Image (cartoon, rainbow, N blue to C red; front, side, top):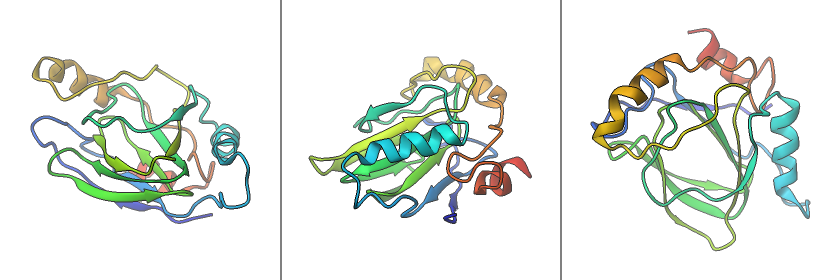
Length: 172
């Protein structure tokens, strides 16, 4: 099972981020090189680990945004992207095929540029549907309350019951 690197982000005034949970990045978690459908590898992995709350295939929005009602996992099936995580004061990471990012509710993300073949698989744990927040002032009171009430997932989307989310999120 791959290790995960935690990233903590503070509220930047627009993007609240998560006050207690770090974003986790699993580098080279999935070998996509030999698959004709690398997205299916991520879909199976997330589903077998209980992250069945609405899987999708697409990219990452080019504007800053976050989800206040759900945690989200992003698997990079093809290509690469420079993504700013954590809002304007966050960190820019280059994610490549095989990488996975686990974003706690409130964690900002924005695609700053990507290869033309970028393909991302996203999923959520069972629970509330995800929303789309852009860091606008009017959404702040409700989104802050939402983030505080999002339940912790029962499993890690990559490692199941023994994955890094247990150490970094569930044992807090």
